[in-house]
Image (tube, rainbow, N blue to C red):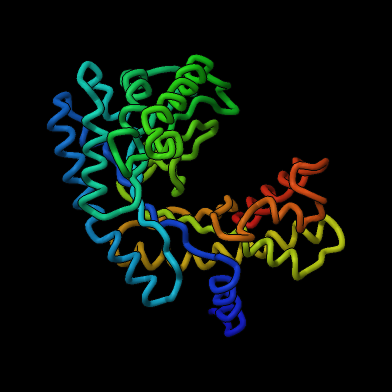
Length: 319
């Protein structure tokens, strides 16, 4: 049970330290939408996404209103489209991107991720066609995000995919140069991609996931920075312990939101993920965290070690 001091501490984090729930992301499997006729496949995809996520935006807004917790984005992730498009590879698979964008627009979500391929060990049917279509897909859609996993610790790096993705990033930027190159900003090239990432642009719904799940992403670099600033830790062990405790407090709020969303949408609760990625807010930056840890300036000697410690402490808080 939450105590009064915990509630007041969370309110302060939200009001003064830029704590928010960055996203509620609904992951939806499209495996049962596969069809050799691309038009039928697209119809199935649109209908399933709109059915499953019809109340996603409203639920997020209701939770924000009732609990006072900012929920910045409501998003959807789907099965990597290269898998769905494998039997349609001789057809123009750009239709899948347009279908995803149409569904996102209908539902009012901020982004939809999953225009993706997993090629760390090689290319399967549909992978080449999807990667080649990414620049155009991101230029003709507004809410679609794309990602490609090109390597893993176990499998190594697919160098052919590296070459293709380098070109894709440049082409995506060029095709959207009149929009501040937003195409490249909606594209992620991964190694060791996870199947339940709620954050864009890299979110996709892994084939090992359930048919539909709710994943929540929490943003808290400002909270960690403020905690370090107040504590004035004397050594690196104290820093690691404080980061662990702070990360636990942050993710607890995310868990509350995830449980509420899961219950109201009748969808299983997947994971809560904590991001220390920067936002435009002043002081909401991982660089400031590293400097509070003792670095003279981010980028000087010791930056890599401090970042490694920070990542390890955050991961440890989830166990």
